[in-house]
Every structure is written in C-alpha cells, then in structure tokens.
Image (cartoon, rainbow, N blue to C red):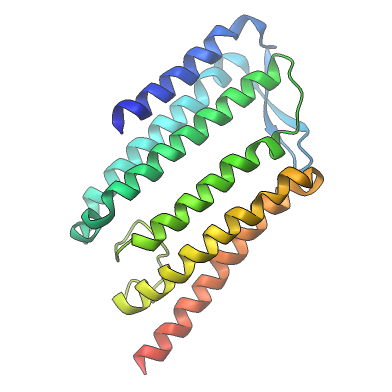
Length: 208
C-alpha cells in the first residue's frame, strides 16, 4: 500500500514536470460550480502543491489510528481503511493530472470530470462504514455513536447503504454537467446531516 501510494504521488509529479515548459505562468487551480477556472497559482507552486498536500494527508491518515485510544477496534478493519487511503491518493493524483492537462490546452468541464472519482470515493466510504468499529477518528463520529457500540453499529450499517446509494446518484453529474457540483455536494452533505440526527434518535431509544 505504501509503495503504491508513493509511486502514484511520484508519477503525478513527474507527469507535471514533463509538461512544465508548456504550462502558463499562472496555472488554473480552482474552478467554480460551472466548471470554469476562476483561481490561479504560479506554475512552480502548482506543480508541487497537490503532491505535497497528498503526501501530508497520507501521512496524517496513516498515523491517526496509532493515536486512537480504541486502536484495537481499528485493527479489525485496518485493511479496508488502508484501501480507502490508497483510493484517496489515486483521486488526488487523478486531480493533479487533470489540472495539468487542462492547463496545457485540453478543455473540459473540470467538475464533471471529477464526478467518477468522487463517486468511487463515496462508494468506498460506504464500504468502510460497513465494517468500521467504534473509534475516535474514522467513521460517523457523533457523541451518540461514540457512547454506544449499538448506536455506532446501527448508524454505520445505514450509513454504508446511504453512501453507496449517494455514489450512484452522484454519477448524474456526468449526464447533467451544468448541475455536476450539486450532484457532488448535496448527497454527502444531506446524508451526513441525516445520519447525525439518526444517531441521536437511536441513542435516545436505547438510553431510555
């Protein structure tokens, strides 16, 4: 897993360096909801920023389970968690490659291009929720799920199904590209809010 992650980060960096001379001085690095570039970064920074950020987050995600007071629970789903970390690295590398391609002359709706990547991430998060046991850093962490194994398990079983359904729904952004941002942002936001409320209701039920 570690070699694959480092290899992907290195490959995306080399890809950017290969096209360095073809990049404009100000590289588009941010796009609005319509997929139109509206933010720019100096190309030297742009080439290394995403790989450096990916490496930092990779390191942080790798260390967090070691700091968890319930690390024994994390061991039971560690392989699934590590798989999600690799998927995150793949997504960030994909984003980096898309950014370079856009800036050397290829034109496409960036938000719509990211839809498949986000959909895969949502689905994998759903798979992780399905097996996650109670811990302090990974999963749907509310005061009520952290206080009860029963509430944690019920919330995560439902969350797994909803996030997988949300992954499929988000693919609508490929078809309706003008609304791609809504397909990406609304499902996880609404599902997360619903699951917070759900965990509270379940806790009240079992507490009483």
